[in-house]
Image 1 (cartoon, helix red, strand yellow):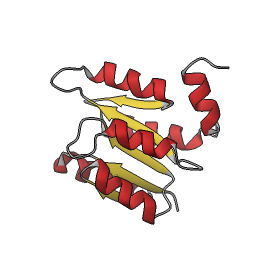
Image 2: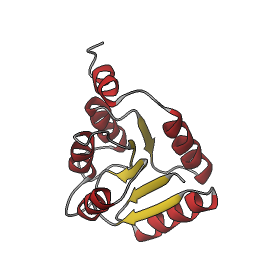
Image 3: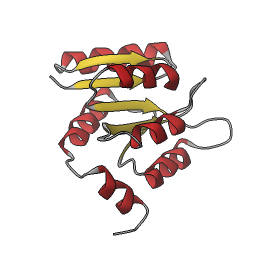
Image 4: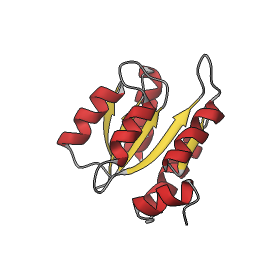
Length: 138
């Protein structure tokens, strides 16, 4: 069974993601911030991480850095609606430069979320190629 870790500080959104993904047959772990998400990653086999960018304690950018250092890292889908100083699009472009190939700009529908997760899980590009492609090394 495919296991997905959802990291989101908005409890209502987190529960919605969990419900949608479980209805599709995925095993879902949830975390309200990057610190909790990192702890779950260290103690569970996770195939995909769905993470918000703007969160308390440990934001999504730091979490993504730590995930990309794992060997092999799970697939990442980054989501953002922006923050006080940066737009969601600029935050998603930033994580794209870090090597994240799958992003969603809030707000999005459940159908769009499920499609993004499915597409990300089909991506078999090795992590090193993801990072190199994102920064133009290949």
